[in-house]
Length: 403
Image (cartoon, rainbow, N blue to C red; front, side, top):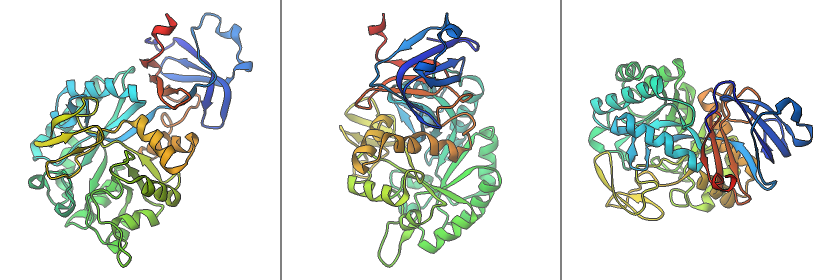
C-alpha cells in the first residue's frame, strides 16, 4: 500500500509503544510519510476519518518504532562494497521483513579506489533512490581501513592503513558528506587527529578493531570518541591489571556500545553482564551482517575472502568470525531473553539510541506525532508481522488474511 503525501491510513486496536507512554489499546494515523495522530481507540474520532482506510489488528499485537541498524555490510547476496545501485536496493528492500526501517551502509577495509567507488555509489543512491517504502539509507559507516592490524578480525590486513585526515576528507567529499560514523583505532599514528576532525565535522567517531590500552582510550574519549564498534569483538579485552578497550567502554558513559546479540559474538551471560553495567541507554543492537544473511548455508565472499556460513555464524577458514547472519528481530528477542530486559528497554537499543547517536531524533527513533512513520507490528512472540517505512507497508505477513 503506497500512500501519497496527503493520503491517510489508520492502524488500530493494538499496544503502542509511544515516545511518551504505552497505550494499551491504541490507534495511529499515518498521513503520507509521517505520523499524524496517536491515541487510545476510545478517543478516536471516527467521523473525522470517515473515508480513511483502517487496519484493525488483534489486541495482542504491539507497535514499536522501526529498528535502525548502524552496522550492516550486506544481506541477500548484496554487499555495500559491490558498489552498485542494485546491491543497495536489495538491502533496502529486504531489511524491512526483519523490522529494520533504516540503516548505515557499512564498508570494510579495501583498496582506496574500492572504498571510493562504494562511497560514491551510496551517495548517489541517497540522492536519487532513497524512496519511501524501503529501508532508508541514513549514510555510511566507514569501518576501516584506519584500524589496528593486531585486531583486524576479518578485515583484510593488506588494506589496513594509519588514520589519515586528508584521505578521510577526500572520501567524505566523494560521499557528499554522507559518512556519518567512522570506526578507527585511536592508538595508531594520526588517530587522535582524525578523531578531533570527526568531532569538529559532526561525524561519530567509534573505537573498534583497536589494541589500545586503557589510558589511550581515555585520551580518545577526551578527543571525541563516543561510540564503540561491536563491543568485545575486534578490541583489546579486559584484564585485571589492564582494563583495555572493553573495560574502558564499560566504565565510561560517554561511549555508547554496539553489541551483536546472536549468542556467538558475545555469550548470553556476558550480554546480561554488559546490560547490567551499561543499561538500556548505553547499548545499541547491530547485526554486522554480511551478504550471506537470508541465503542459508554455503561459502560466500567478504572483501575477497571466503566465508563459511552455517545456521548460526559466518567465519573465515581459520575460524575468525566474519560478520554475522543475524537479523535485527532476532537480536531484539535474544536481548530480552539473555538480559531479562523488557520490550520497552530494548526499544532504546534498537531505535532511540541509534537515532540519538546520529542526531536524527527529530524524525526517527520513536513513535511521536510529526516523525517518520517507520513502524513495526509485532505479535505476542515479538515476531515481525508488518513493517512500515516512511508510511508505506513494505512487509505484511497478514496481507492474504485481509483479502
